[in-house]
Length: 188
Image (tube, rainbow, N blue to C red; front, side, top):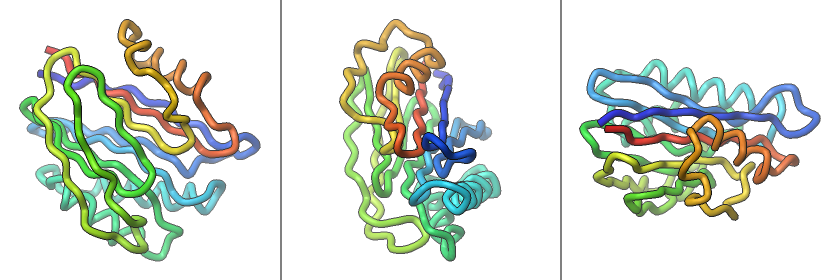
């Protein structure tokens, strides 16, 4: 099985930069992907998001989700902090962890997850790692709180991921906040 990922990121209306970010990295045995939502918006939030992206890029390719969450937490100290969801897909399995207000919806296989309390870089409670076996045709949608969760994912079933990102952003974006949506499709 293969993972195809698309994403869209927009800053709050009136801002030039976003404190939200998406990350995708192919590793030797799969794909690591994440949505980061630095607290607030503007230049300082964008700087925190950049720290998070660099922390993920610098991580050894074999790191599991817990190690990646720990790395983010350490590297974001001294910044305003962030919410985030980090996932690793390999051999049909999804492992992930969400800290703060980044969400995940799934179509096809139901992925059960619990939000981990805290703020990456400030206070991190017990990291709740979730695990799911995925199947071809499944779709995952990760999004920041700049996207309203009031949408029916099944309405996007026939759309390509890039188009679904654009439609979600145009119909469900909260213009008063930075917004990110990432769609990962499981292909045979």
